[in-house]
Image (spheres, protein in one colour):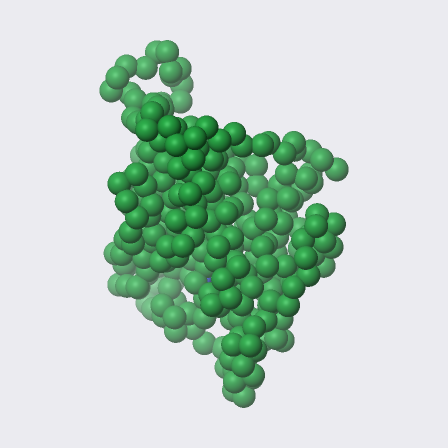
Length: 329
Ligand code: SD4
C-alpha cells in the first residue's frame, strides 16, 4: 500500500531565513559549482494565496520562518480556512450542494511532482490533509466520495457535521426558489489556493474548496484536479485558480500557466495569457469570474482575473499584504 515514504521535514531554526542561501536561476543544466554570481538569486521564502485569507498566509509563514518545508506550509496554511466555520466556501462551514450535503474537493502537490487529491468528500473538515495522506500513503492520486471518506477514517480523521447553523439556514432559504445563479465576485464560492517557496527554494501548492454552493450533487470542480486548480513544477514555478471551475478545467489553467512561465513569461504575463485563453473560448460572455495566481522559482508573483475584485495575499521577508489583481474587463 505504501508507495511513498513519509518524509519528516527538518526544522533548522530561524537562522534559515537570515542565511539567504543561493539557488539556480532557471538554468537547470548548470550545477551550483559552475554558476557565476549573476546566475544566482537569493532564495526568498514566500507564501501566497488566493483572495484575502491573511490568517492562512500568516500560518504558512509561521512554518516557513522556522525553516519548515513548503509542503507543510501550504497544508497548514489552507487548514486555517478549512477549520474556520465563518468561511462558507472552504472546509467545515462550507455551503452545501443542492441536496443539502457539504462535499469538499482538495489537492496538494510537492516539489517532486508527487500529488494527492480528494473529490466529493463528506464529513471531514480537512480534505487537504486527506489529500496529503493519499499522496504519501497510497499508490494513487485521487480518491473520491465514499472511498475517500472510508480512507480518511482509516487514517484517523474524525467524522464531523460540516453544515453549520448559518449554512443550514441559508440552504433552507435557497430551497424556496432553488435558483442557481452566480454573481460576479460573490459567486457562491471563494476557494483557497496556496503556493509557497521554502528556505531550500522548493515549491509546493495546495488548493481546497467546498466548490460552488448549491451545485448539482456529485459535481466536482477544478480545485482538486491537478493541472486545473493547481500545478507545481519545481524547476519553473506554481499556479492555482479560483472561480468557475468548469472554465479552468477546459483550459487546464494552472498547468498552462506553469508552461507559459517555462517558456519565459513572468507569473503576471502567464496569468494574463491564461485568462485571455479562457475569454477566447467564451467570447462575449461576462457572467463569470476566474482568478489565477502564480509564482516562479525566483519568488516573483502574479495574479489576473476576468472581472475586478480578485486579489491575493502575500507573505515574504518584506512583509504581509494583499495585492489587488488587474482584470480582463
Ligand atoms: C470550483 N473553483 O469548485 C472552485 C470554486 C472557487 O472561488 O474557486 N471558488 O469551481
